[in-house]
Image (cartoon, protein in one colour):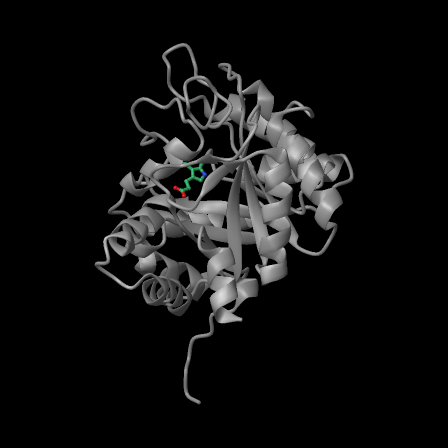
Length: 305
Ligand code: PBG
C-alpha cells in the first residue's frame, strides 16, 4: 500500500547486439546469456522482448571490417543500419527503437571518434560524422538516437542535422553523464572493441559530480529529449542529482560489468539471481531514473508481469 517505488516492464530498455557475417548467434563469454545476434535471431529476440513488455530496444552493431573513420557507421548498408531497417519493418511502432550513435564499434582503433595527427580524438571532426550517422539511423527507422561518445556539442549537431532533412520527429536520448568506468569491460568483448588504452580524454573523471551537472545542462540546452547517467550502480548519487534538476526524463544504463558481477555470483550460487536483479533495478528507480537500460530487461519484464 505504501510502496514508493514502481518497477514496470515499460521502464526497461533492452540493449541488443547484432554482428555482421555470423551464421549463428555468438555468446559473449563475460556476459552469460547475452549474445551477438545474426540479423535473423535479432528479429526473433526483439519480438520476444517486446511481447514481454519492455519499453524499448537499444541496438549496437558489430561490423566485420573497420577503418580509421568508422565508415561502416554512416553506410546505409552498414550492419547497424540494415538491422535497424529489419527491426523497424518487423516491429513498426510497437516499441521504441533506439540506435547507438557512436563510432567506437566501427573504428579500427576503437575510439568513439576519429583521431588527429597526434592520435588524440578530434572532437569537431567527429561531430560531422555523428551528424551523418544520426541521419542514416533516422532514415533506417530509429525512433530515438543515443549519442554515447561524449563529444562536446554532439546533441546540437545531431539535432540540427535531423531537422534539416525533415526528421524533426526523431528524438535524442543523450548520454549526458558518462564516466570513464572500469565496468565497461565486458561490453568491449561484446562489440569486439579494438580499443587499447582508455577514454579518459572524453569520458568523465569518476570523482566529479559538479561536472556531471554541467554536462547535463549543456545537453539540455542543445535539445536533448531525454538524458542518461552511466554507469548506474556506482553513480546512484549522480542519478539522484540529475533527476532532481532534469526537466526531461532521466535514463540510467545498468552496464555490462554490473550485469557480469551479478551473473557470476549467481552462477556460483553465492546470491539469488532474480531477487538480486530486481533489487538492483529497484535501487536505480529509487534513485530517480525514469528508464533503465539493462541486459535483464526481457527477463525482468517476464518476472514483473
Ligand atoms: C560507446 C558505448 C559503450 C557502452 C555503451 N556505449 C562503451 C564505452 O563507452 O566504452 C558500454 C555499455 C556497457 O558497458 O554495457 N559506444
